[in-house]
Length: 247
Ligand SMILES: Nc1ncnc2c1ncn2[C@@H]1O[C@H](COP(=O)(O)OP(=O)(O)OP(=O)(O)O)[C@@H](O)[C@H]1O
Image 1 (cartoon, helix red, strand yellow):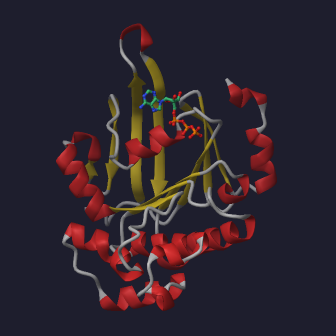
Image 2 (tube, rainbow, N blue to C red):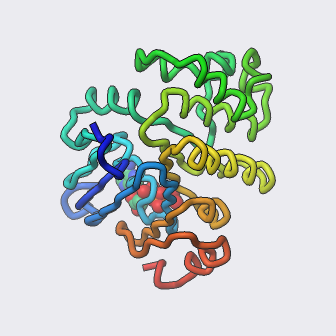
Image 3 (cartoon, rainbow, N blue to C red):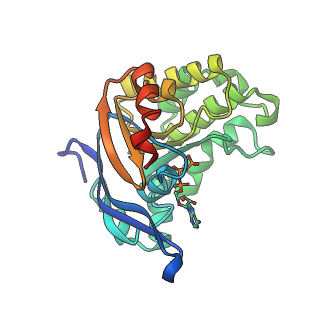
C-alpha cells in the first residue's frame, strides 16, 4: 500500500459544481492538497468558501466532478459509492461537531461500532491504551447523554482512532465547546498526532484550533489561496480578517 510513501492523502485538480444549467456554480475550483503521514492539517476560510465540500470530497462522502483523491494506494475518486463506504470504514475515522454518538448505546459500544461495521479485529492492547489516553476508561458503561460535551468528544476521538485509520477527518470538532474544553480536546488531538503518528485533517473557524495544526490551508472562493505552517492563533486571526479573503 503506501508504506513507502510519506503522503497520507494527495488531492489534485478537485472541481465540484453545484446546481445545473445557468444555476451551476463552481464550489471548488482546481483544488490541490497534500497531507503527509503524521501531519495535522487544518482548513480555514470564510463561510461558503468550500471547506465542508472539500472535506467531504477528501473523505469520499462526496464525489468531485473532476480531480483525484488518493489515500494510501487507493484512488477514492475511482470508487463507486459502495466502494467509498467500504473504504471509509476501513481507512478513515470521523470526528464531528455534534459528536455523532448513538444515545442508546454505551460509550464502549459507540467506540467499537466502526470497527464492527468494518469487520476489523480490535487489538485489545491498543483499545486499552486508547481508552486510557483519551480519558474515557471510567465511562465505558455510561450512555453519551450522561456525559458533558467535552467528554462526548473524547469518546468520539477514541472511536475515530480505534481502527487505527489512515486519516482522521474532523469537522469543527470544537465548534460546540467552550474555550477551556476546546483547549483540552485540541490537546488530545495534538497528542494523537505527536504520540501515535496519526494524520488529522480538520475544518475549523477558530484560529486557536487551527494554530494547533502543523499546516493551515486557507480557502477563498473555492480554492486554496494560501498555506501556512506553524502559525500562531493571532496571525491566523489576522489572516482571516484580511479582506482579500472575502473575494
Ligand atoms: N448541497 C448543496 N447544494 C447546492 N449548493 C451547495 C450545497 N452544499 C454547499 N453548497 C454551496 O457550496 C458553497 C460552499 O459550501 P461549504 O459548505 O463547502 O462552505 P464552508 O466553507 O464549509 O461554509 P461554512 O463555513 O459556512 O460551513 C456555498 O456557497 C454553499 O451554498
